[in-house]
Every structure is written in C-alpha cells, then in structure tokens.
Image (cartoon, rainbow, N blue to C red; front, side):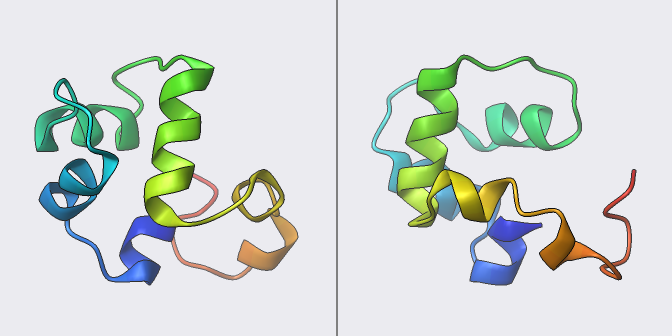
Length: 70
C-alpha cells in the first residue's frame, strides 16, 4: 500500500533498495504474504520508501483504505 501511495513500481522499489538479491519477484512475494522477511530486509524496504517504523505500523491512518484488512 505504501509503495503504491509513493508511486513506485515493484521494479523501482527493488532498484531503490540497492540490494543485489532484491528483485521485483521478491517484493511481489513479500506483498502477497508468500515470503517471510528478516528485520534487516524490512529496514531496507523502509529506507527505500523513506518511511520510519511509526508510519509503517500506523494502522489507524490506513482505516478506510480499500483492501487494507486483507
């Protein structure tokens, strides 16, 4: 949701992470809940999205956003 709100494609986000192992398919798997991630990967994604943990876990801010409860 945050990636889309920031206007990034999965490819663009993967490129912004600067990590060799981070690909569009890796990000897609994470977004679909098909892959568990390490805290270091979560930190990498937060840095690439330029957000802090409070923004990532502010679920009240996302109330009313379609599909958020899935």
